[in-house]
Image 1 (cartoon, rainbow, N blue to C red):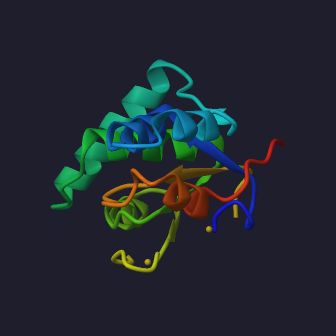
Image 2: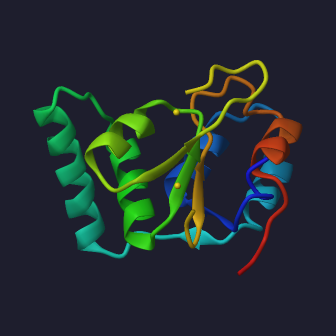
Length: 144
C-alpha cells in the first residue's frame, strides 16, 4: 500500500507502537520492520520542535499526544510525509508544514504531500498484531 508510492522509512516511535501491540508473529514482524530505513531524531532540536508543535496545537484548542508531535517533528525535519490512519496528524498538518497522507484500510476508519522519505505511522489499528496486515500496510522494503 505505502511502499509502492515512494521510499518508506520508519521512526523508532512507529516501530515501538507497532511492536507493543503484537500478540503473535512477534519475531517475524520485528524482522520485517527491521528491513526498513529509520528516520532518527537529530538531537535536541527535534524535541524542542515536538514541544513547540504540542504548544501550538494547545494554543489553538487541538489536543495532541507527545508521541504524535515527536513523529511529526521527525518527519518535518527530514522533509518526509506521514502515511497514517490516525486523524491527529491531519490536525498537526493544519498548524505546521507537515505533509500527511491519510489512509483508508478496509475494516478500519479512514481520515484526510511528496517527500524524500515517508514515515509510516500505523496507529489505532486493532489488527496490527497480524503480520499480513503489517505487510499490507507497509508494502515491500525499499532502500534509497
